Image (cartoon, rainbow, N blue to C red; front, side):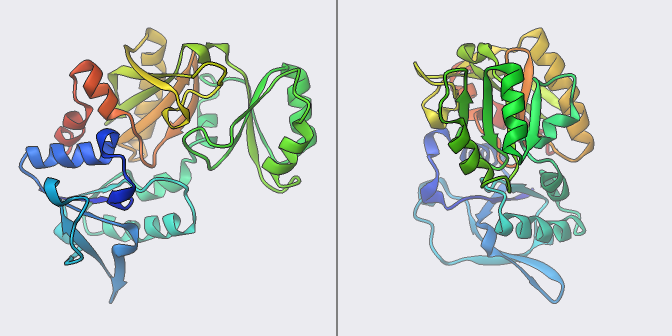
Amino acid sequence: MNILFIIDPPRELILKKDSSFAMMKEAVKQKHQVYFCLQHDLYIDSNQLFCRVNRFELDLFLNHSKAYETFSISHFNVLFMRKDPPVDQAYLHTTYLLDIAEKSNVKILNKPSSIRSWNEKISILQFDTLIPKTLVTANPDIVKQFFKAHGDIILKPLDGMGGKNIFRVSEFEKNLNVILEIMTKHGRQMIMAQKYIPEIKLGDKRIIIIHGKPFPYALARIPMEGETRGNIASGGQGLAQLLSQRDIEIATLVGEKLLKEGLYFVGIDVIGDYLTEINVTSPTGIVELFEQTKHNPAELIINALH
């Protein structure tokens, strides 16, 4: 098969733990023809979608030449949309172009219209029996009422990643007003508030779902001392562990629904017994899981393309 990966610039990737890089290597190992490009390499001409691409070669990846090849998108059998968030205007425009690719019978992981409709924070509300007490609002007074009811809460932006701009607010917090002013932009921007889950100390578990089925191990991201965020990007330590029965229950329910939406490769976050986030844009963690368990998620992902 001819497989195309839309990625961030290679020099911005941390290759030793980058999931896209791991999948590209696995696809080459399985004798597929692998190419990569950036999102601005897509273009429409005469109502056809084209792309300027580089062939993926391991030794030349970081220093790939500017001698692009140009193909109609129909040249590819599979396309992986692996551009990291934020889901800004440029990202959304790319998904609109990829809608056209679907009409050329290219299999796109993940389905572009579903990426748009499944916000990685708000989409957990589709599973109300699996989530902690959750509020979404732009109104600081409503957040304060939520805080008064629960006493210990987490505040997060709806478009963040990697644990950025996440705050824990407990009874001793004196800066709630200014935090809310900044996060909601004085009541004009929605944020999410959730009841604090003490089990975060045991890890924020990243569970990989491949074609509707959970990988048997989670990557539990353990917060640093004094931290409430387990994200590896925020200094958390990743520890592979077998899924619990509750993990399997959550991942199976979520995976079955997302597969129907064309979301084939997904990462969900679970703290304790609760679903806290659904990552549909560019899930990570497969390299750490492979290193620690010797079970290779990248192999399962590429195998599922057949």
